Image 1 (cartoon, rainbow, N blue to C red):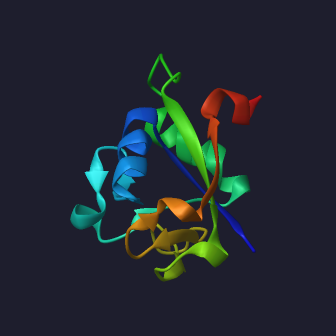
Image 2: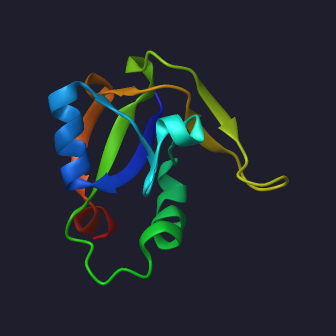
Length: 111
């Protein structure tokens, strides 16, 4: 099992739990718009958080979804965001809420 991580806002996750699937790709963009859901490996999370939310003063609504890749029903491809960059996991379809094993506050994740 590989733990994949995804940063999101608590209200978006709460809505997904009611629907049964999470369908946001990245901040402000949906799976339908992008074609996949952006995810990270643990060592990549801080860089992603800084790129997406670094300028925000309030991170209290941010949560980290911890995803068990063996529970996914969609393909995962490791691809670089730009040629020559490190590969990141991309989920090619909706994330079933049953694949999320933990939800942690971003502030707790970074200590």
